[in-house]
Amino acid sequence: PPGRCCAKTCCRINPSIDKENPKVVHAMDTSDLGNESAFCRCWRSKKFPYCDGTHNKHNETTGDNVGPLVITVKKS
Ligand code: FES
Image (cartoon, rainbow, N blue to C red; front, side, top):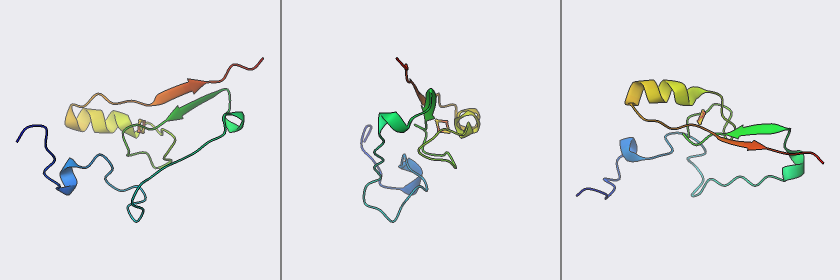
């Protein structure tokens, strides 16, 4: 039915990152971020949780439109 997962690997958002873990979680301190950080939301980056640009290939291949979360830290 529409909206329900078929439980097949092709339907999973995360195809390969830390699959041995039941839940992938990253915690970061904002003081450790540089002036700008881009975090992967396509789950295909080789530098996960950081974006490495792989989303561009994913979008071209699938017609998807995903991109990173970009965080800019303002230094006072
Ligand atoms: Fe995943 Fe850029 S590589 S959002």
